[in-house]
Image (cartoon, rainbow, N blue to C red; front, side):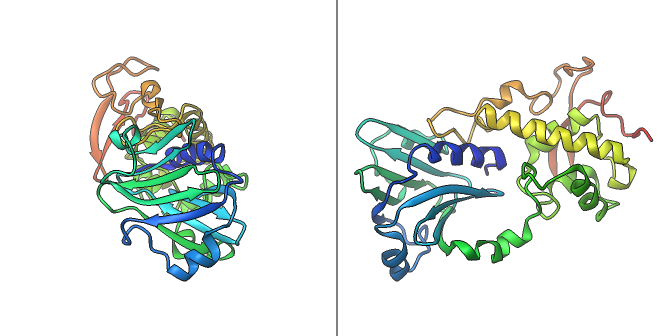
Length: 293
């Protein structure tokens, strides 16, 4: 499943491709993927212009001038592939549907625009979905209420992180950062990288951290996420950017998938250990369990 930087990368790419286009038609090949009533489709989607594209945690929203938003969840194998007479841009699971003639057997929904370009929603495993929600009501949905603050939002600060973490004082920091109710969008890769950068052991409990530790962690999270977005996302197996290029952040990762390789900071071998049920990469020397007070 994509993490925040992967979905953000897709958002940024599609913002360059489809803003200002109008939806001329929608071809539905699998109704389980397109969870939208026919009346909503005809009244609020067809012949309406795309204003912008936004993201909340791991959801992608295409916002229309009808005051409705198309909400996409790509899940594990979803793709969005844009095709016009001169260009082809793909985003999502990197199978051959990104380059083959479309529609193919994985195509679930096709959006046709007023310039005759098409946007294909492909999904091999059929877990992904598209919904239509009034834009003004998006923040009232359970998904939006459930998730914590966005780590790259201008309102997010080290003080916000401090307060949210301290509401779970006995939780291991690895589990706390993976908890979407505390902070949205972080997954295994970015938690491991942020903890390494902060010199915090993933087994450390929240109440062992000082405010200084959490300020350092806050800066590390922002650094890692911004770096990954700049490099086009991280996942080299499941997601590619809006130009069909695989994210290349993992080539520059410090600890993730680097077990038995030297730590870039101290040359101690990186270890991999299952923590809170997740494969976790860290340096046993740089990230000692004893946190400085």
